[in-house]
Length: 70
View 1 (cartoon, rainbow, N blue to C red):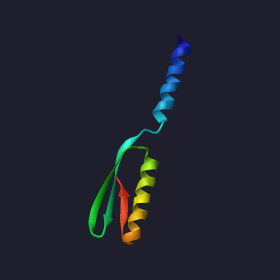
View 2: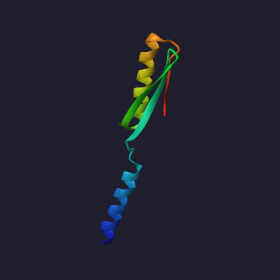
View 3: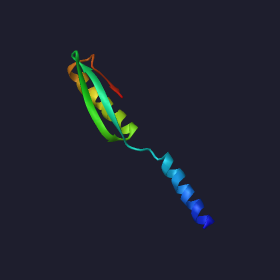
View 4: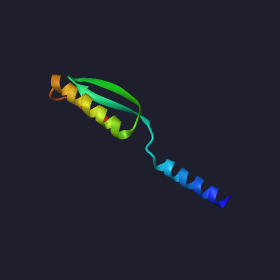
């Protein structure tokens, strides 16, 4: 029983450090307009990559475009 409890505690500890998916928004300013892109169920690094990609795309049309992850 003690061994089982130790294993269960270890599993809970590992899962608590696993990165979880959250809801983010990518807010972009393009040609004086604000564009909000919902990023639901993303890991933070994936949301950051997506927001950076959106900024790169918008900069093709407006060199002053900028996006921030919230």
